[in-house]
Length: 194
Image 1 (cartoon, rainbow, N blue to C red):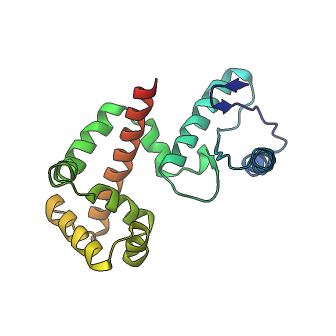
Image 2 (cartoon, rainbow, N blue to C red):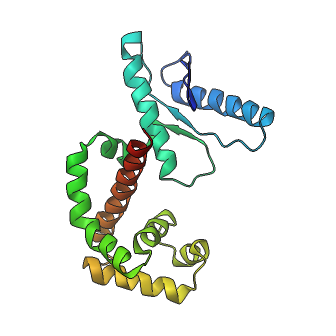
């Protein structure tokens, strides 16, 4: 089925255990063929869960759309995202927006306010820092900033949020806050486009 900027496929499943792997392989082959025919095109694919009857196809389609949203959060070289492999993101995609907004306000509001008032990039810095698994050297390189600049930003983040990035619980709290910030930002963009 063709949509404005998307194609929807129903893919066959031969064995329940290998369904996701086989369909990821099929999608990879399909994306490769399309990119060979249309050089320069950037593609990503979302893969929903397996279903036995067409009544459940809608649920799988919604899962595929949610999996595809993961492409907005992850700068990965692989363009295929399977819903069943999203881990904690599956939970976040299922939580109602009101609850996510509340968590977002509690955790991210002070940083976002500081960024706005001081014209800083603390929240995007934190996002990249988490994407790089807390590796300061890789984070600084990716942000094109000196390591000392990054250290100063991270210290400022800790001061503003009263969270210690060395503490696993507090780091997780901030990481979830950043993920939710990214999700809510993306949803707002989608609403503005619609």
